[in-house]
Amino acid sequence: MTTSGRLTAPATFPTTRLRRLRYHPAVRRLVRQTRLSPSQLVLPLFVRPGQGIRQEILSMPGHCQLSPDQAAEEARQVSQLGLGGVILFGIPAEKDAVGSDATSATGIIPQAIRAIKQSAPELLVITDVCFCEYTDHGHCGVVNRKTGRIDVDNDATLRLLAAQAAAHARAGADMVAPSGMMDGMIHAIRTKLDAIGYAHVPIMSYAAKYASAFYGPFRDAAESAPEFGDRRSYQMDPAAAAAQSLREVELDLAEGADLVMVKPALAYLDIIRRVADHFPGVPLAAYNVSGEFSMVKAAARQGWLDEKAIALEVLTAIRRAGATVILTYWAKDAARWLAEAAE
Ligand code: PBG
Image (cartoon, rainbow, N blue to C red; front, side, top):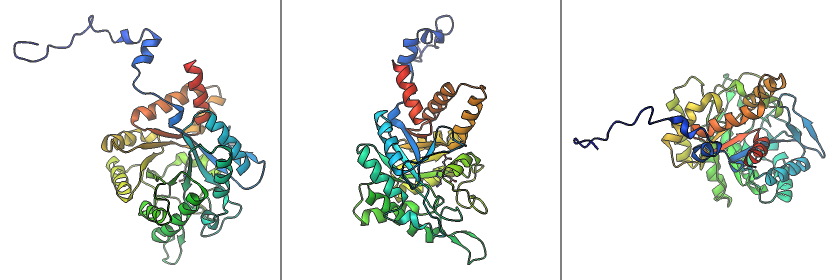
């Protein structure tokens, strides 16, 4: 202390040497503030009808559309690796204008949940709640053609989303994750789940979901590309002020969301940080989406970069930005890489 009571100026070089904490690998590991654990990673799975099917997704190397029995096998491995859980996306046998398979008790997702719960009962099963994979037009809700302005009918879609979430909960889903960006979707789903005895099932809201070109490979995987138009009338504008994501999160929390998500992750690390700082008590998830995965895969196949190093750097960056949970196609690989590193 100086006589004026102020702290003395911090020591500078040569007393202070920041490299001292970097020489020894064990010191680097000890003081590392951002940690990545398999328990924080969630693996997306694509489920389709049938038996014994593992149909490769060409735009997402290493990932397949799986029939329920194969999804169950995958779930067993995921559970052994200590991952946080799986999130299920369904490709139904038949699509129609209102996405009937999505609300059916015998639809593809209820079938998959039951198969997974038999093979890995302790594994957390999250379901994506949305209509784009189930409608013949590929939009995330019912399309209203009457008004002359062809668009997804927000309020008519809410009832369907509630019915879809109910079908998932009844089949044994541990958590539901609405991704359609309809206004009021969390309220509609919460009200329905509470009314049918599933007040204990948490909702993870895709709260700040942007209309992003990074979803390209996913739309192949889930066969959910819109037949006409795009999703800009419901998903957020990438150029919107970051504060708009705070409004989205705030409203979803007020409607009863338990966890919130920012999606995509990499081009939106600033949004992850803003939401994490603004809502420190709320578990925050980030979706490391298909395009973020496939572009690294493609470059690695060319020998242009090292997939393992890049993937771990990317996942660490998403954690450092403030996400607690990460949905990622690297979940299984990352768990193995992290286990090797710890040996
Ligand atoms: C749609 C949904 C999408 C993704 C997750 N849920 C696609 C979309 O909005 O078009 C994208 C995930 C990814 O790209 O990995 N309900």
